[in-house]
Length: 236
Image (cartoon, rainbow, N blue to C red; front, side):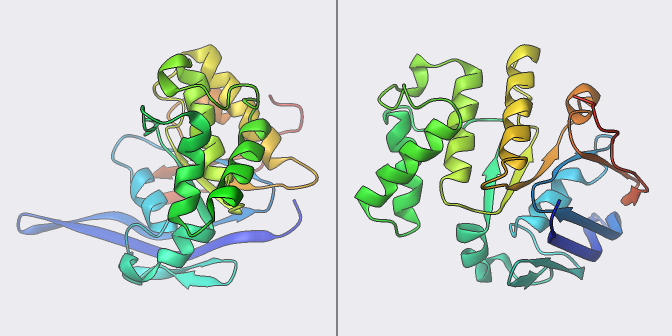
């Protein structure tokens, strides 16, 4: 670990349910270092996805501040955070969200053109990203020609293709068998611990076996993060 990439402090969020308000997040503080793979766990309804959406600039908090590189946000309206989402954060979801009529190369390149890249630049970055996740020999394949684990690798390639420093993954192995899930988490380890171009990754998961492969586990319970410590070296 070399430096703090993401820092959040005092994050609060509540939702109105009928005449009552449900406090989902209560003064949450967290940080993620460059090159760190962090697993976020907690019971159903504990606020994991809410916290991830706030960190990702998709949902504003009621209070608190988040710093990611040059960006400071938290209580800002998401409509003002397009630059943050476009350039600094890559998302990986449980569902792959790939366009079936496009090759996997075009799936990755298409999202880059939406961010303003030229077609030639988008194809170059798409090829590099797919090679990085081990799919360089399947550029012209379509999603239906690949396994679930391979399609998730395409979605990871899409997330890293824009050279974003932070990846957010919401149950990224939820639709995969255990073997494919292990392959994805090992890929996350490789991406985070790459000595030349490390990224940071915050992953929501319910699977303790997968979480044990992270550098650190955060446990969210009753809207608060419980104290945790780094996992011992050698856990994999």
